[in-house]
Image: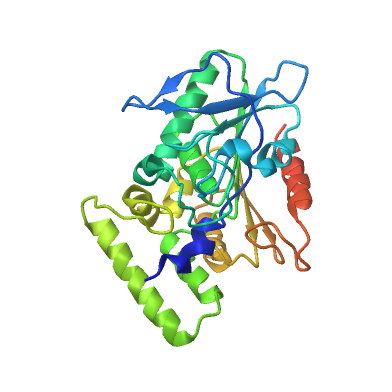
Length: 309
């Protein structure tokens, strides 16, 4: 199966980034000795007691170069300090590139990046920040893969005040991949061949020991984690308030699978989860006429957060 078939599903899952300063005095290393690159930005002249954690999608780009994070989505809490964390192997030296198959994506990133790795990096960073006693509340907001990471952080910790998951997909990632293929408009026979090919790849990745692979800019660890994750199981463990946002015209993840997941969460009496659907919105926050829906989403997220006070 050609990796190009997956470009929308995992290449267009970009959500935000922005210019930000390195967090002063914060030095963090992983268990293998590599440094975790973090940014902490103040948005107010007053000392903030809220920490807003913004989590980008699955693209191979530095979080320091995407203006959608700190210039727009940071405004859901305009007085909070904003934390972003680079993925393994990525630094601000990596220039911004929307090409899904960029040739200069770092080898360390391909080999080591995964939602689990990112989750561990965020938890380590937030724990160290909270040890300083400055932040009374911690809010998470992530899009696409970043939404999955936000859910994982919330499920694994007890320091999250509330979290927001934007266009994060349904229970199983393979359903989102197949939805993306179907949405591409390929003929039925081509879809049948491509879906069978991908399902064979998925079976190999989930059943085999690690092997060298670079599919759509991601390696074994990423694919193995994404294909094994059960978001219903993850969300069932989350106790803090969660807002799930989903665009009805999303071709990267399956809106139907998201609706099914929401229904199952209701059956589990997960009253801490709020669902907000935008019927005309795409994965990249575009409306029916191609206009940006980011402003409306930000307004609605701000309204939801204000009700938690």
